[in-house]
Length: 433
Image (cartoon, rainbow, N blue to C red; front, top):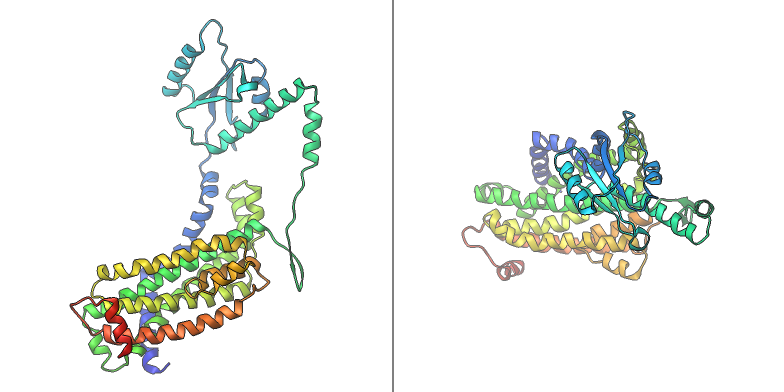
């Protein structure tokens, strides 16, 4: 890398990081990721539900009392979560009563009503009527309480003591502690938090490779359309210009990744306390956050495979930018390349669950898949390195060297061609020049 290439690197880097959009975007990026992955719990704590008036038609005469006892929770302000009332049918028919109660629901006198049929033991179907049936948590709670009551009734009818059975079942529940065996000893590891961390990092990896690769294409097309390229290459070789662009934009990506890595590390250390102060009451979620282990070694490989992925796809995007005259033309070539990158992300889901299989090894050695798939294997097995980790770095490095050599030949011809959109066949001819 000579002085001229460094000048291009400096220009590409500074012209992007000094913009208000980059600064604001970098600061907002952690917030956006936090909202994407934790927004449901955060907003659930901020927007508390109001108490609801619910009427129950219990045709069995056996369930209403026990059900309302199980569903006697309160809101944060101390008010009852549900205000229950029982409707006696008397001489009225069920259909007439449903029409009457539905009218009250529509006029907002009632929030909902529930019909428990007389044959509930056999049918095991209870109807819930409301304007809004999207409260999955509340409906799941109702279903669980009804299931408990019906199970108790069925057990009692068979002569089994339901309370004793449930007590024994509760005492028999086992917590499966997951421990990873390594050469340095056994390490306690939460499988859920490990998968979430792998998924999050691979998603960021795929997203950044794609977005910064496209940035290379736009930069090349912009200079080409404004006829700046002729002036620039009068004092610098095309290969130096291309490498300067690739490295300069890469440094912009690494700058943002450092910010995101700092956020993930801070969230793993202090996220549970912050969520508890925000009013989030989800013990399982808090345990998962406490178990996130974002190590320096994992971050090192994260940067390494970002570099590999960015340079592979960024070089291809640079070649596409040199071949076309407008972004619309370039999009036709960019789409299949981006799909290839996205495919590696979808493969990651299976590989993260089975990182040590032979199939996972071979897929992770395919250069276009290596950045995301091999990193997924490393993240899933951290602190143990999976088989083929160093081989993948070596083979991907060789592939990248050959790719840059070919792309440089396409780039040096393409940046000076205007008007006609060249075909892939012509681009292959340029490599032979």
